[in-house]
Length: 92
Image 1 (cartoon, helix red, strand yellow):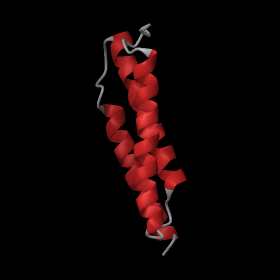
Image 2 (cartoon, rainbow, N blue to C red):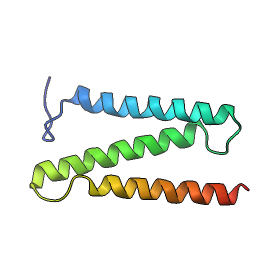
Image 3 (cartoon, rainbow, N blue to C red):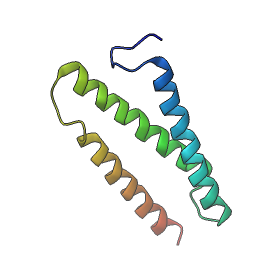
Image 4 (tube, one colour):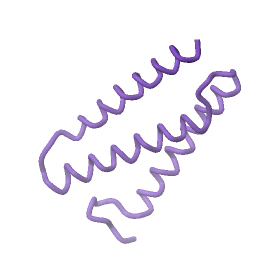
């Protein structure tokens, strides 16, 4: 297994991405079965984006040795909350 400059192997990166899509799909499937406005596609995209942002943040912290690796994660949570708030307001 060849490691990337992030310290993760390509298999670990692909595994993280696939797991984020599967977990987002399961959450979206459950919400879609209850006729909620955000379904499989929305949740899969949000989970994939969160996964990519966290891996990018991990890379920046590892490569440059500076910064707080939790800052982007906090912004992801904030953005998801904003999106869901808009979604609930729009569809009511």
